[in-house]
Length: 444
Image 1 (cartoon, one colour):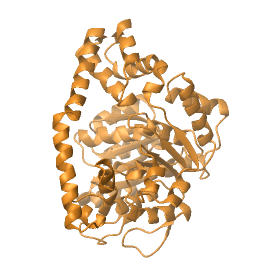
Image 2 (cartoon, one colour):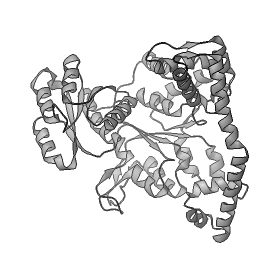
Image 3 (cartoon, rainbow, N blue to C red):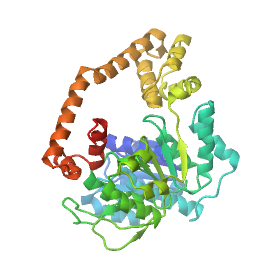
Image 4 (tube, helix red, strand yellow):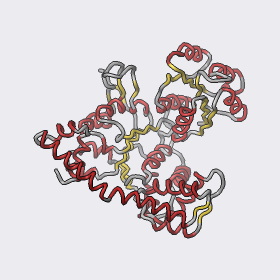
């Protein structure tokens, strides 16, 4: 859908626009109500997301103007501070679709957009697209001509035509996030939300609330009810990034939510249905974690229905020139970039331990530093700087860190008389992380 985001708070405006664009929407922004009216006069929008209080023209006036003229087909979602809820109720009477109380998580808006989109297209999931359309979208998103990447695209096409759960396997930076969103955007669930959970980002005590939500007062700090990611993804796709980082003690509830398609919010007694498709990613060998008692085998088999092994960039060097061209078109907004042939050869020969993400960062930096001219000498300096950082981390400094870490682990184990759970808790570590570190230092 085409969406206009109007908010005089720049950070919220930009981050919300970025997250909506990542969902596949066409997003335009305005810094106040007057600018929003200019954008509305110049183009048509499906949805307008506007703050209530803005300079020049506020959200109520903007809503009235939208509903009074040819723009009446645009749905309006109001963003408002808690103290302005009576005004938001007034906005509802004037024709606003719904309102969100600030502060809110950007993903909270996804179900509202899904309701608007499904109402416009009918409530059933979208029909399967023609094969040619699906392949075209996948080819555009996943760049490369190598045999390895062609195999990945073929698997994405299979995933798009199925509703089975998917497991994406590959190193950090290979593009698992991109593949997850491409699977969703080419599937029959594409008109419903795509919700990502970074499983490594949340401590053990918060992951349950993030996934399933919580009721007001269910724990200290739960000042209001919060929807979890399963609810936010209703009808769509839930992407569990770094699923290997979900603590063992929370995997049973996740298994049940996936297997039985039911869950409860933290602090709630009633069950809720979970109509979501699961796409999960891992940068580790889950079978190895299962052997170490850190990952449930039954959960693994629920996730690993369709698998996509994403190759590292060093195994598809022939794709580097195409990736360079694709990435530079994204960065070079002030004019085309100029690359020396030597620069391209240097980039093809590099091992890329950080994969496509490292290539993107290096190109962006080189483009900015070289004012659009990327030479072999400039790249040589950038590659040497990156290598130096890696050597520092793997040299004497890292040896000292490793030695100290090993001593801490040993000490905690001795204090806990070998009880790993107690030792991990004493160090403030997740049990899964603690076990990984024990294995790293040969203390298992």
